Length: 352
Image 1 (cartoon, helix red, strand yellow):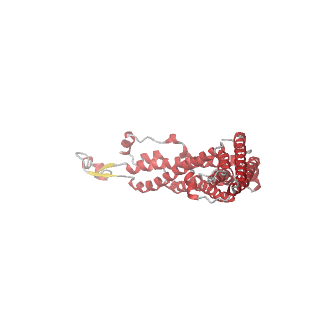
Image 2 (image 1 turned 90 degrees about the vertical axis):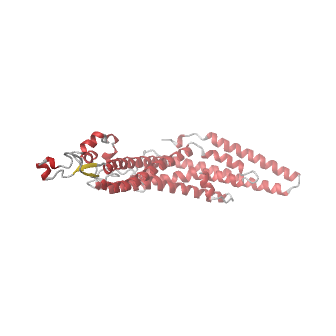
Image 3 (image 1 turned 180 degrees about the vertical axis):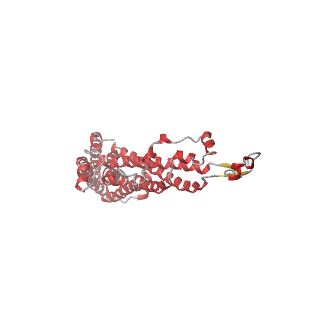
């Protein structure tokens, strides 16, 4: 786990300071040129940009202050304040809590994926098992007089699929399997975005934004960069940390795979228990129709709990992190308005 609060951002802060000094120099030179040439437009522009530079510097100071506050806030103490049971590290900060939630969501989705895959494979094998049943097999006449069997001197019978009815179950399990894959990939995707943020990628937007806002026709461009840096460093981890406070209910409950006194899905997490489906198993089916079903230990009653597990993982791995990202993007739009610029939300989504 990346420790956001132990990362040294001194270089980034120095770059922001250098950008502020260069911007101030550009504004000062522009102001002197405006006075020298008696051009009021240049002088007014310089005064306006001086105010914008002060706003940018104040924004950086506030950002650093809130980031330090996030590092001081303890998730365990915060959860006790609201009456929750925190399942992460006792020393986790806001930034640590955000990463803890996404890691837990990825693990939760992977567990749901494993359970669903086991049942999907088992029911698929059973649904596609085919047998040729000779006429009269099992009847009293065939047992007494074997020559009456349809396969005694030739082939007289029909092809059957003893568990073909499980084909309907496969459709449901396939849909849940696809949802679990999406949950797992999306939770990892959001986790990697968070780690890019933690390692200072977004903070590099600060010096670029400070300098770009002082250039003609680039104020909106610089405002977007500063707004994105503030939103992803403050709003994004804060929303995820709030979800992490509810982690004991969302993804870390000790009963998260035990929805009913008669159902426990945890044994299906062991992927080494997959039975063989070779020709030997098919040969055994000729004498025992229940052979493969017994091998897979499949319970039809588990299906509704697997569906609950899959839906739960989709909410934890896709829906809630997406809410956090949308909230972050929306906050960037409103923060940019503080700098006097209106930005297009659709273009911000494309940039992200």
